[in-house]
Image 1 (tube, rainbow, N blue to C red):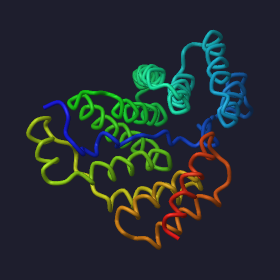
Image 2 (cartoon, rainbow, N blue to C red):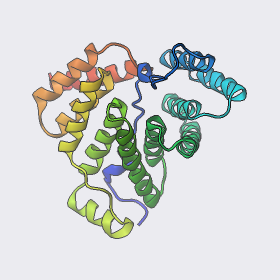
Image 3 (cartoon, helix red, strand yellow):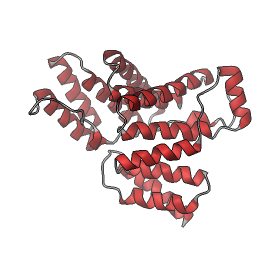
Length: 264
């Protein structure tokens, strides 16, 4: 059995949800910025401006001047995922997503106590889960999405993007019907428990921590799945009102407008 028709988990993490303005906010005991911190701040600004290649070039330059650090690695992973999301070539997107996952794994190996390293791994695993033709591999990757999102939140309970990733995982996996769940359990060993209610809870927590268009957009889509039309409309409107904070905000807002036009 290679393909399961309608199996929603294949779409579980067609995402990159990391808000650019929240990058680089790791606490530092230093009284003033170091050269490395200033370089990382420049990288984060380039990402906000959607200059992904330039940001990667800055990180490559920084990695030649300092030992390979988790701060460099998780940013590289996120940026490779950005390039995949922005690519109009499926082949290039697959290459970029593989690179993102490889670098994220190195980040976790470098410092398993860093929340952003686990978040990068969760995001990269989710992206790869949507591109593999292997059911078994998709299930393995989907487990990693949940595992590393949970680990990121255990390390930093105020990491809004990690709540978002976990919420999307809950929504997609929770949407599987009984037969699909039975097949996954019997053939592939199952997945952790998931529910749409938990997805709503995690999205609302993310929104409480930070105002991001993509939080409101995805909560709106979740409410639509639940036939909560009024709540969905409210979230789409809030997505449109959210300040620019992510390189993909224009896409998120276009999607919110499209949903609103269908509901109003």
